[in-house]
Amino acid sequence: MLKECFDNVRNQVPLVHNITNYVTVNDVANVLLACGGSPIMSDDPGEAEEITSICSGLNINIGTLNQRTIPSMLLAGKKSNELGHVVVLDPVGAGASRLRTETAVKLMKEIHFTVIRGNISEIKTLMLGSGHTKGVDADVADAVTEETLDSVIASLKKFAQETESIIAVTGAIDLVCDDSICYVIRNGRPEMGKITGTGCQLSAVTAAFTAANQKKPLEAAAAAVCTMGLAGEIGWKNMLPGDGNASYRTRIIDAIYHMTGDTLEAGARYEIR
Image 1 (spheres, rainbow, N blue to C red):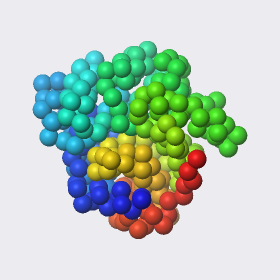
Image 2: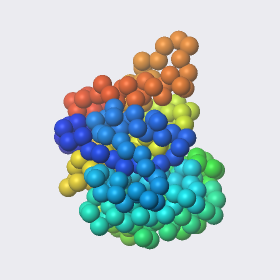
Image 3: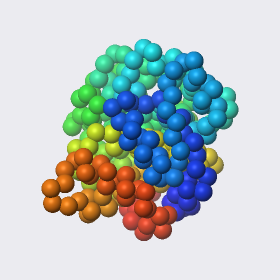
């Protein structure tokens, strides 16, 4: 299943429209190319609908949110819904400020998202409609652990049912859920948290995977999360003396570039609940 989802991205080369975080926009473009997709970045309201119309997926990321780009997000999202395109929401920092929280909630009310991907604190904020987080990072108090896993999965399945979206929570344990099935994924390295933008990159990869596998959004999102986590493991093994987080970022993207569907199938570590 993972191999098929991965190979479909390579074969179809989905064009993904990104209205995304300017801190990580270059890495987002490169990781899309590495996984087999094709990126386009456009956040002006004057062309948002036109650009998204020629794509098969839309990735909305509120990491560097500003008043100019919010209308673009709404225009592109509604046009994508109208055309039946895949739409991914990355609610970066939801709960850290009123603007971020209210914008994320507004986007969810006006746009149907195929996948909503964030850390546990961001997703918890969306579930409650309000909240407080530690900036763009998950709050330690919200961490998904073996002890809290069953209750978190139950709440995510309920949220997936309410939103009719796939919910992907990433952290030490990654969870990808619809209203009845949850992939519990254990790939990745803790060092990935020392790199700015691995979450932003994953949201873009998720958009590419779901765009190339529109009839299997849950499996596609799970495959994307496994791909990123496995790349983190492979990239870490390829680190050399003197390498730091900048080198690690590059090695992760390179690992995705060289990955195959067979490599993913063999290296993915997950269970289904």
